[in-house]
Length: 276
Image (tube, rainbow, N blue to C red; front, side, top):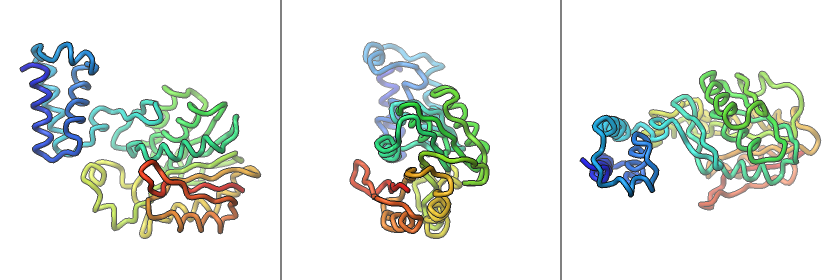
């Protein structure tokens, strides 16, 4: 079998299982097991594929066909131009969340110290430290396994500029910050089981379930954020597409000013921000 035939086989397998983006996933998995770039593939597409590579390819295709997320197979996900390590203990970074980082970079001053609640893989706070000027921060998550992943990502990408602590929201937090950011669990409990298989069966429920109405964490964050922010400090959170007004009102009730609902690239409400 040639590399081209192997790729065609991979597409066929994934399409037969109704995998979204089957062609893209088949290529990414072939690239993963063969370590070929797209350019190298075009040069070698008619060469015979090594039997061991083909065996590995069939193995990962089977995993993907059974709805294991692509990122859990490769162990990586790109976010804000950085490559993050991920596994089943953290939510896979999504492009939607880049809106939170981009909005934070617009308003957070140079040299700011930032708190990231429900940090997961650490993608938000690490991206802010990597893309901002002189930014440092602390990420907090209730999952020790998630904290381990976040620490590995920080070590590779920003060194000691970001540290991580295990804790339940404010429990381990001391001191004041220039900004607080969060992408908390916000899916109502009853909706979690309706999510696609890759999400509900493979990503941590702790990172998805926002309790009965999906707003539990926003209530907790907006009620106490002012205690941990410097004067003029910013609070920015990611939200579900239908939670904009509810979270906006929680910000106002929490004493925040100039509260805005920001849309993502597809035009859905994605971020709420405000300052003291």
